[in-house]
Image (cartoon, rainbow, N blue to C red):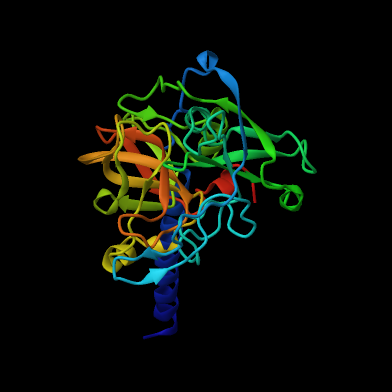
Length: 337
């Protein structure tokens, strides 16, 4: 091959390489930006009621026997619900933990006049509080500190709160009082059909919108999530007639499914999609349905249990279009950590 032919050959291949590189870059930019014609989610903001609900930091509890049994027959004793959890917060692993149903950051409840964890007042706290709501510490050394609601745990009727300022945690003590500015219950989406929302605050709507959520030309709700989870592995929490309180659990006992869906990387406060799950009036398996939720508590070794999911959106018709974004976690979305 002569020098001129070699020069043309090299120039030709350089041009092809440049075109391929440019195409890849443009495709990546389009994918990252999402659909250009998306509209922000609209809802009945002017109709929503903001109401004070109050809780105190719940002490950790225990039963007569501290032992639990795993499906393989192993016996274990581990930390569980309640208290101030210093080293597992929004963004921490929900799986790599020597704990069972551990609730991130700070756990609130309201034992009320009956003194029960499942009192009328605690149920009211759990139902009215919405993820992203503002929280104010009312007494003690941390008085005046502000945080955000990051999850709701069913059965225990607990609400979890996290704070941006790490120093707040050393100032808190069990039974400190906190006010939640409950705002979001009654939210109705007005520009997307076939999608219901629950446990959702205007603050989280705004944060998700900035992260790429919107309504597509086809009328679907497009939303960032960290994981797609098959409904076939959902467990404890099935059977409830509504999802305005509490959560239901992702079972992580099947190693093949855990590996296929990358579930060992689940974090506390991840926004996740549950595929073939309808939460319109309770939690059911339904082909084509999609539900979105937030990881509210850690993994569990008890049969039927695992990381808990608090629902924020559901569509029985599958009118939700989740896309993977590793940053779809409340730690980043709400600027907590």
